[in-house]
Length: 460
Image 1 (tube, rainbow, N blue to C red):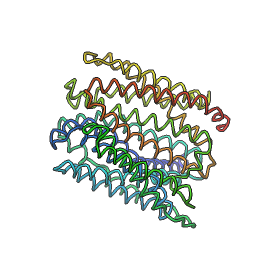
Image 2 (tube, rainbow, N blue to C red):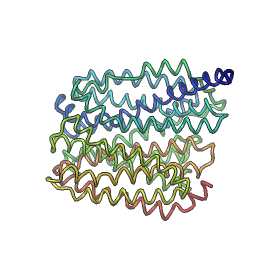
Image 3 (cartoon, rainbow, N blue to C red):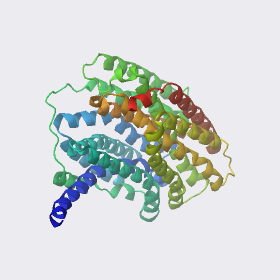
Image 4 (cartoon, helix red, strand yellow):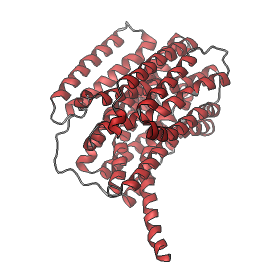
């Protein structure tokens, strides 16, 4: 028995260290998605930023992350995942320092974009390193991926609460200056093995990469500008035209490329197309809602940053609980019903939120709001399971990357649209945004139910 313990303990320590090292990458990425929202009111006051500037503080990060995510994974395959992970973490850490020291709006926005680029490099490589560590032990790999996912979910949930207390006691810059980058880099060199580069060096799709960046930034910028300039202004019309032209060229380039960064053939199958639609609808509405409610709590309800963080706590806790339950439900009933029912619950929640009035109490808002995390928390794991079950194993990484790119792009667009709706007045803007969200998520629910029928057969 003593010999068994001697051999198990080092293995368990190595396992924990590997999971912790890779999970830190996911933690910093997810934390920066949610922690900044509760600081927006203070950032706006300190740097004289309006709603449009605050939208860019959120979206510069999200857009850079979304548009470079596939390139980060491809670069890790090409030169080694640990090397790219460390480089991305170093870039992220330096950009975080610049964010915390920023004395002007545009310095902060530019640094947030660099943060997003660092996140795009490190996140896919963190999962590749974890997959590499336990490639020959599937049960242990499954548990490790579960812990990796849970760490990201906890970070996303803890962000508003942690950010609220940090902003109130240490100032808004503190959310950027407290960083885990040095620890993550040390742990990567200490506990993670480098992945071997692929023997086949496929050409990097630079044209596709440049066009997707141009498309996303011009489209989101046009939506943000509508809040102050209106839909008929020259910057908005010009941005939309540029987005259409760049997007069309992007589709043309990807259809002809031998090694496309965004393989369009995935969408020839029904399930990848439907799950991407679901992911787009979920992130667009959810990210927009969190952005809008963060400003609503502080500007309209006059909540402190701590109270704003605590106001989001039931929302984030419900997402975590629902995610855990979703796995068991999908295992029993397949992915189609949890996805459709979860989206339908989300649509009901948005419809109830559209009835909000200026005198609506927090408790009255909360019970409506909880429909969203319960429903979306049920739908998202089923969505991911359906996608991965519908593609060959060799394509799973690419398919997952495409889905995450679509989701993050949807989140950035949601922040832009919801923020622009506030120009109509906070309450009226919220009512319109939530009603549109109910329609979008309801449409996704119908698509998931009608066109995802073979998802459960694929899973089997």
